[in-house]
Image (cartoon, rainbow, N blue to C red; front, side, top):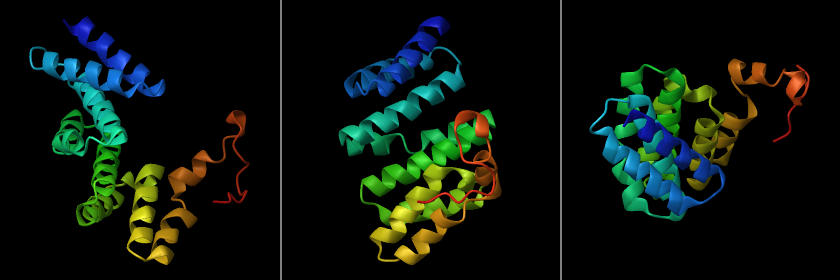
Length: 170
């Protein structure tokens, strides 16, 4: 059963990268159903994350919003900082794209305070929120000065990134 869940989760992620969104929804829902029988929280998190992305991308806002409480709780249970940041930024994006800007703003602020601020997705969602609310100067601040962790990742020459100290135009 565990192997089946992991294969289905991998198939869902692969379908996401192939932009086959109906397949993403199908596979990830199967994983979520089966995960009630087997304790495999990392795989269930992965499935819920890609289900949230796919339902948001297809415009199924009710399905996207259904998963909002699960992602952060599961990420906290896993004690994985990267997944916590992913969960918070995904929830902010879902609220933004479904028009609940106040909730998105609250989630973004919590995420930026929680060190998810080093994630480009969280910073860009916050910038889009500020822009949509008419505060584009405030939004620009989130894009203009990347945090040290992000800035350090720009220094890696080996994968085609600009050298340290290089100015990145946005």
